[in-house]
Length: 216
Image (cartoon, rainbow, N blue to C red; front, side):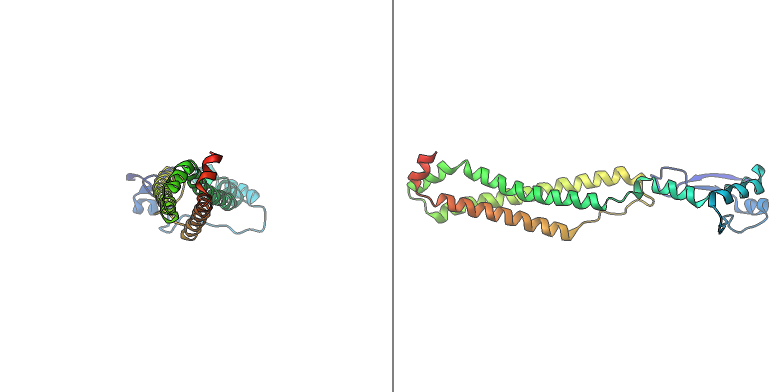
């Protein structure tokens, strides 16, 4: 008998996956070069049949007998067997609302804090088109900067999570799965929120400058 070693299915496998040994010796010792895995179909209770087969083979056989009920229970209790579809949809919907609301709110608050500046600029002769340029330039800065930062941080976090969970999945994921449809909807929602916030602020700065200054 030549013991070679223990191989793993992939580098981060949580358990030893295969026993590597001399094939000729195994075939000679078992009396058969065929695969030593047997599947038993029965109409009876799988645990009961498992017990009967174990008693029939005896402890000296070295065979491992398992029933499908126990294996199914072990499989369903694993992390990878949990169905996260509903939780994922809820989390993605919350992220969509949060991104749209935060984008519009940040723009509205930022422009609202400068109402006095816009009123003074309007009083000294600034045109509405020029004031609108300030608003839309800030909207573009907030939107593009936020999307770039969010995409970068999201990609980095996803990479870290996949790396951490590599040992859980068999086989591990080869690459990230990108939900392009959801991302397109997210961009659309953010764009609509920013457009609504910008339009609202444009209507606000159209008020007479003196009225705005009195309110402040």
